[in-house]
Image (spheres, helix red, strand yellow):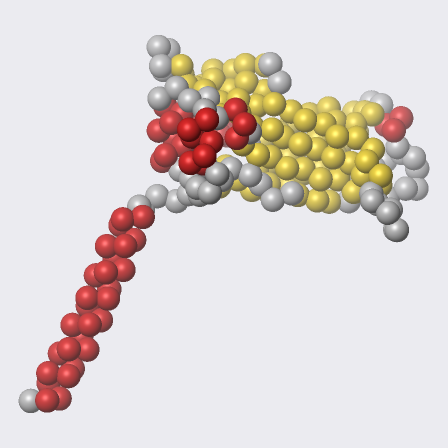
Length: 195
């Protein structure tokens, strides 16, 4: 009888632990947090300049999607930097370029608006906006006259939500929230520059 009650208690404890974990998981929500990650980036020559082409992953949490659908615009900064590494000192900055992107929802027309450096396009779904935004093409970032042949350069790209453009109450909530942590790790590479 003791063996049976001990096994029964162990099973009950495991069952109650599993149930507690399930309840905790449900309380935190099934939805994944927001995510932003650069997959690839490259510089391509175009005449006397270089353009940047990049692809990245972007997903919005339900909280961000809801805020967007209620009229809150999201502002992003894409920041490109080219440096010349220095051995004993700080890297020498050759160029820094910033692109401003905003995503908003227009309730009257039921369209999402994507604005990239003052060029606006309308889309019927948030998925379309994400597909367009996550494929950066022909962004003019660098003039060849700034470069010297035979010098190794280091390129870096980062994309982030501009939290300073959020309303003040939301700025405080977004500070430590995974729902609003839309910032990519800095993507670094050594570009193959044809000079």
